[in-house]
Image (cartoon, rainbow, N blue to C red):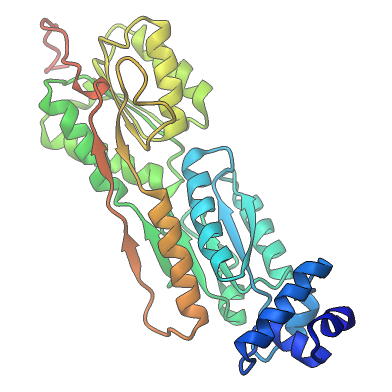
Length: 340
């Protein structure tokens, strides 16, 4: 710090005030300090500096997402990081892998690093660490999944309504044998999407025997094998609702392996890479992860700046994108199984 002060022609206290973002420093002086910081490649010790700051902040956020290799989660990560970087805040990110124990360990690690706020995706409806966060007064925003019995800000899609709309789309194109491929039911989004699917099929009067639900699918390969088994069954589905992007990828492989990609309709929840370049293009219910991440990080900063309003559940609209796979009609002749 002494070298920075000497190069900028100021005292060390002025350097400390500038790098800790304290008020009442002339813009020209602050610019000279930052120029010196860059010239000397000076790295600020945020952890130590936070002990001297009046607000005690470390200018860091903790971000917990489902998995860094999931494009949806990756887009949330990028949106949070971009918004935080603009404010000079670093983001510590970790993958959840839908494991409650891993979730708790990640939150503990974030707290040990004294992050200023947390943006969390959860493995289940309830968390054991909520009381600890409340005691420490750390602002939290939940993304993608809204926890139960927890008063906190959240940013999600309306998963139930969106899944219902996707199922109704398939029904409107004449399908009665519709399969749902879903993630584990203990994951809030998976449970909500299954409810939306069942809402639509029940209201259409379709017997449950014609609408098989295969849940507990953790990855693309599991979805691949599950749909393959359905397609080889005595009453194969004429349409599929895939309730998660990695599951959609597995469904695409299963349909192509069976040469049925032009015969069995497919609607996927979440967009997938190159979906518009396939033949047929994949019809999807697209969430907006960039907007989810942007709203979440802005909400965190509002809380850090003193917003004491009641917790708010913000719902980000989804988009339905027809590209061809969801518009495939059922075979013209199907045996009547309405009494099955």
